[in-house]
Length: 496
Image 1 (cartoon, rainbow, N blue to C red):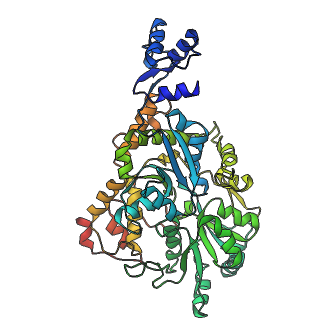
Image 2: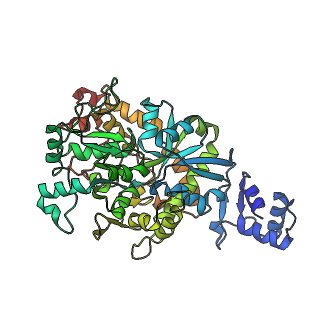
Image 3: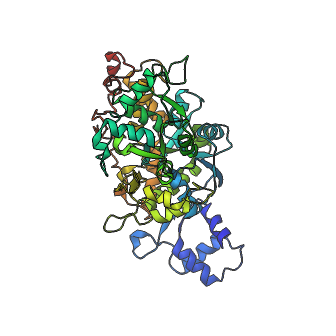
């Protein structure tokens, strides 16, 4: 029966599954050669063929996409925010769309991106900045798009035990059993200055030059007056004028590098902050929820060429991911996340994240441990669907572009119109909207699950940043110029 179901899924028809199922049972369908026409004829005899949600009853009408490429391979990095891809596979959401999906871990973000671009992977769990950087030609150049945002939040900044002890000495309030959060980098600044005076490098890890982690740790440092370094066309290391040297470190290696003393802290996604706590080698001092409340983190990325070649397949993938995101954020009547423990157990599999379930569920189940025993409720540490987290907002894309310009990865000032046009080249809400509409028609989602139809793709201006600096995506030039540290652009560009 599974092969017959898959065959039906690949037909471009609208089928009432309750009718077909009953027809199959009554027809004694042990013969795998039964045709769709025979099933429809049997359903018609039962007067069920025209059943629909509007007709009453529990029947479900599903529009079946004719997927151009049913066998797919997606890449991911071993982080908990790969969860929508893993859950879409493990809970059968890909299969329900007629897709046979393999998910494969990759050694690092560059390899992952290169394999998507050269076609070895159909798509991947990507850093939100990767489609942006590739499309504007920073690093590996290719037109990469996203129609699905995998999550909000999910990162932390961890320092070694020794650095944390020095931060506490600089700010006695940090010595409390449960110090007040958010913790800024103010208490870190004297330590960094001391290293500079002694001629020593203060090195911290981040995961990739266009990663959220790079921009978040830069934001955190710069908001306290610590210069995280600039990029230029001639020097792409990002350490020009740096007080703190930021070095690329693969996420699973960060705890080991911290323990070895190769880095003194890092910004990374889970479970690698909680791993430092579990091993007793470091202390998470802040999360990216406090650096920017409900910030975009990862996306599902494909090349534009792949999307144009397999539009129905892409649509089917987005449908499955939306269902996975909804499942991950499902709550009970009291607001408790009901599926996260199961998700943590699935992710702990060696083929996925491969960390102990007790480490993964620290953050996945709505809490976060900063030090041994300092466990705090953080229901929005990982957000996969609520707050419209899975929608590809143009304003999210523009924030990354402003940070690329702020730190010199975009070498020249751009007019405001360039930011809006570039966002539309990369973020594809029209694909997301189409998938959402189908799920609503199928009864798998409601219209209220998604932004209103007149939504323009720009989240409301917000001051929910660690320094309180307001961000308005419709004024990217003004936003860039609002920071003390970083590039400045001519004001007239804001009007162009």
